[in-house]
Structure formats: structure tokens, C-alpha cells
Image (cartoon, rainbow, N blue to C red; front, top):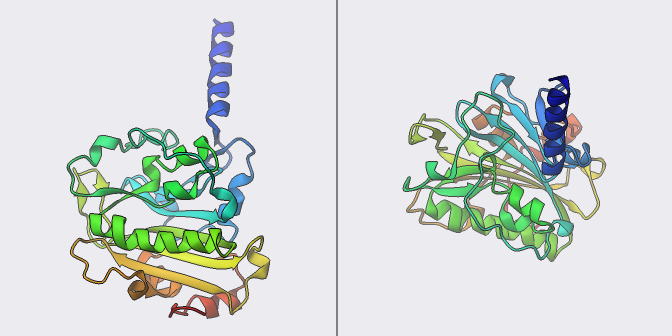
Length: 278
């Protein structure tokens, strides 16, 4: 009997290693196991926190880090690094969107069919195109913890326009981006009484030169923050019309962003509103 238990334990550990995800009992969250520190680049500027951490379940992957809300069944935020190296020739994953195996035990795991005929797109935070270096990278973007319900106009037009702009900064201008995205919730509307629908979606993008990190951030570092309405019938589809400040997003979400940046610098870059070409 003891040999059987031991064998089963070994099989479970091997399964976790192959999948690239391993539970960390010490931190109370899941993280990638190959290697365990690759996730840190995605939160180099700080792990966003609010006043109530009871619904901030951290999931750490090689491809991104997110805070999952088991009441809303969506991410509070998703944070990731982006530069030219993340883009490759891997084709987009084909198949249903995926239940996230790292959602905590006992919590509801959103499935592909929850969105079916809901009137909402499955809106990527980390988009598929931004993780095309390997099949594993690309498939990771299809976990439903990385997805928020978005209207067609937002997902396929307005939000996509800003995604394309960010991708061009990396591929054409060789920039290093640190990105945080998520939803702003003022209502309790849900898809099929399961998945919360945000009133708007936000994205914060810190723009640096390739290879730069937190040490190179100054009070003149470019930061682009947007809040976009999650609705159809949006007349103005130019993402620049929806720029805002990091502080406004902090006020709307309750989260403290860019917390690892020196406070005097935060006090400058977080109140600026992007107005176009610098």
C-alpha cells in the first residue's frame, strides 16, 4: 500500500513538472517550475495590491502573472513583460479556451462554454500574438483566467487597436514594455451568473528601451494608461481618446500599481496623461 501511495505521489509530481506549473505551499499560490524565477520579470515594477487581499490569488507562470478573483471568476489584473523576443513563428492555438488547472481547489473553474451565446467575446489580456515564441507560450494565453468578457467593439476594434500599437513598439521600435491590464467593476453583472462583466477595461504600459528595467525608470519615462468602455456602439474607435492616468485607474480599481518604483518618480509618472507622440 505504501509503495502504491509513493508511486502515485511521484506520478503527480511528474505531471506538474511536465505541465510547467507547480503549487508553492509556502506562498499559497501556483508558479511555474521551469525555472521557478522566470515569472519575476512580469512583476518587476511591483505586485499590485489593494486593501483586501483575500480575493487576490496569485498565479505565476513563465508567460505572465495574474491575480485571480474567485468571487468574480476573472482576474483582478494580469501583468506581463513584452519585447521582441516574445514574438515568433508559432501558430495560434486551435481549440476551445482552457480551464485553468491552477485555480484554487474548491473554486469554480470557468470553461469555454460559459461564454457561448453570451453576447461577449473571450477577451485576452495577454493576447495570443504576444506569446508566439513556443507552443507552450501561446497555449498559456488561452487559459480562461487570462480572459475577460469583452464586447465585440471593444475586443476586436478599440482594445485590439491599442494592442497592435504596443506590439509595434516592440517589433518595430525595439522597446521593452511592462504591462498591467484588467477590468473595472462597478456592477455585479455576470455571464450565466458565473463570470463577472467589467464596466470598462484598463491597461497600463510602461515604455522603456530594450533591455531596460526598473532601474532605468525616471520621471520622464513614458507611461500610457487607458480605460475603455466595455460596450458596443462605441463611436470613437481611436484608443488615444481613452487615455487616462495611472492614478485614475488606481482610484477606480483600488489597486496600487508600480509600487516598486521609487515613490518620488511614481508621483510624477502616475499623474501624467498620455497626449500623443513624445
